[in-house]
Image (cartoon, rainbow, N blue to C red; front, side, top):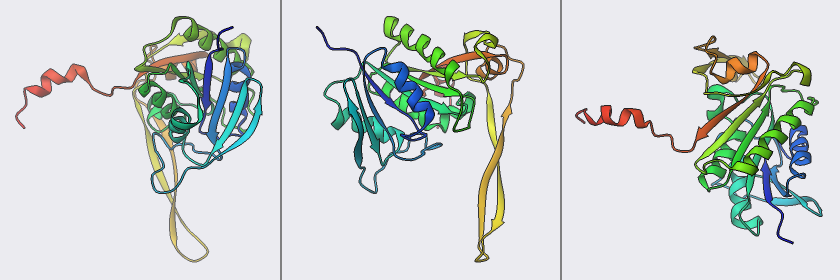
Amino acid sequence: MGLKPLILITNDDGVLAGGLKALIEVALDYGDVVVVAPDDSQSGMSHAITIKQPVRVDVKKEKEGLKIYSCSGTPVDCVKLALNQLLDRKPDLLLSGINHGSNASVSVLYSGTMAAAIEGGVNGIHSIGFSLLDYSQDADFTLAKDISRRVIKEVMKNGIPTDICLNVNIPVVSKGSLKGIKVCRQTKGFWKEEFVKRTDPFNRDYYWLTGYFNNNEPDAKDTDEWALKNNYASIVPIRVDYTCFDYIQELEKRTF
């Protein structure tokens, strides 16, 4: 018999997160699974890597077809360490998530979940990031697991270009209320940050980041934010190459 497909899983919510457990459950139906996940929450770390201190790993669980490591680093550290040290072969698939909370629109720039998927794409691995629009630790991942199965099955059957990864977001609705899975583009918008100034007991000022998402095109039906608000799961293909090819010729006309 040949080797089963090897699936690498990581996340940014930490090795104990409910979304990670849900994704492991799904992935075990498709191959052998190795998990390398942060030992604590690394949300909002984007593509950060650890360079000023050592990165440590511990084996948390090992059984037939499944091995789980916790890692002291970021989600991208987890991917890099897995590929360089912990795996005996290149994985056939990289899965990141299931994130507790949305990674739609510009959130992809800040997301540790999606940074891990992008790192997989950089290394020529078919990679998918999954997010559920529920930030609670006891979120119900029933629908998210169903969507994940459908996407994983399709990618393993037909593949995706290795310089592209998929950003999958899932609304908080019942299975019967889901209208389907919609392939979209990323919504144009931005996070409007608001720093709340506070004073600690030692009379020192500090700032707490809050804010809200500003959707610049709320009625655009081909976007991920529209899809999610209208009870669709969204899939956005994310290119590893950030180059704006449409602007190259225009920029070449400039005098620098």
